[in-house]
Amino acid sequence: MPAREPAKNAARRRKAGRVPESRDRPAPTITAAHSVAGVTGGQQAHTQARTTIAVRGARVHNLKNISLEIPRDKLIVVTGLSGSGKSSLAFDTIYAEGQRRYMESLSSYAKRFVAQVAKPDVDFVFGLSPVISIEQKTTGSNPRSTVGTMTDISSYLNLLFATIGQAHCPRTGEPTPSRTPNQILEAILSLPDGSHIELRAPVFKLYGEDLDFVFTEVRKKGCRELIVDGRLMDISAEIELDESNVRNMDAIVDRFVVSRRHEKAIRAGIANTLLIGDGLLQVQIIKGASRAEAERFYSELVSASHHFVYGGIAPEYFVFNNPESACRTCGGLGVHKLTHPELLVPDPRRSIIGGCFVREAFKYNPDTWDGRVMYGLATALDFSLETP
Image (cartoon, rainbow, N blue to C red; front, side, top):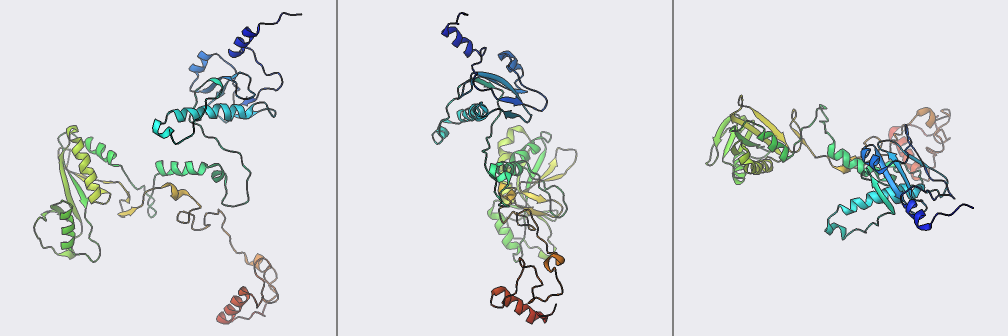
C-alpha cells in the first residue's frame, strides 16, 4: 500500500496549483478562435499581459484551485458540463475581480453610496480590462425590444456615438466643425510668439430690431468697437448708419499678443467671446504671421457654408424609442408598412358592402365608427358603396 502524503504538504502543493483537486466534475473548457490557453508560470503571465488574461489559483465555489490563461481580443467560449464551474469562472471570478478593482479606484466619498464588493477567492488575475456583464434573458416579440435594449448595450453605444461622433450638414453633407475652448486655445498658442490677434464675436441683427438697439446690447456686453462690412467703427458714442446697407458686423472683444505667458488671459478672452457670440468666435491675425488672415472657430455645430447653427450631439439623439430622435419613416420600429392593392382587395368584383377588402383590413358595418367614416367618404367623394 503506497504511503500517503502528509496533509500539510498536500495542502501546500494544492495552493501552489500543482495538484488538481477536481475529481468529481471536469473543469470548464476555454476555446478561442486560433488558440487554447494552457497553464504557464507566473513570469510568463507577466510577459504576455497584453495578449492574455492570466488567472491563478481560482477557488470560487466549485473551482478547485485552477490556473489558466485566456487570450485577449478574441471571442472566447467557456464550455463544460453542468456544475463544472463555467459561471464561477466567468462571472464570480473574472467579472467580480474586475468590478472590485473598479470600486477600489473610486474616491472614499463615492464608496459611501455603493455596496462593497468582496474579493473573489483567487490568487491573482493579471491583464484584466474593464469588464461588462450581460445578463441572460428571454426574448420577447415587442419590436422595440432588441438585443441592444435588453443587454443595455444601446446605452453605451449612444454615449459612444455622442462622444466621438462627427456631425454633418444635412444639406451639403460636409462635416460641421466644432471645437472646445481648450482646442481653440491650443490653436491660438500654436501661432508664432509675438503675433497680434483680435478675438471677434459675430453680431446678428434680428428681424424687427434696429441698429440702435443692437449697438446698445453690444455696449452692455463690454464691447466698444465694431467691424461693420470691413470698416472699424467706435460705438461708444451714437453713430448713424444706413441699415439697408449693413451686411456683416463683428464685435472686437479683446486683443492679445500670442505668448504662453498670456495663456490665462487668452483663455478668459475665448470664454467671453464665445459667450457674446453665442458659441461663434473669429480670430483675426493682425501682425506676426506670414500674412494677415482670419480663422473662425465654433463651439457649436455650425455649417460654415450656410451659416446654420445646429444643436450639439447628445446620447438621447440615438434612442430610437425617443419620439424626437426616432426615424420619421418607421417611427423607431424598424418596419415600414406599405399598402399593396392586390393584397388589400383580393376580389375586385365585389363591392365595399359586399366585402371586397380583406377581413383584417376593413369590414363594412354601418353601425360602427369605421362604417360611418366610409359612408361619409363615399358621400364626399361621390362613389358608391355598392359598386364593385
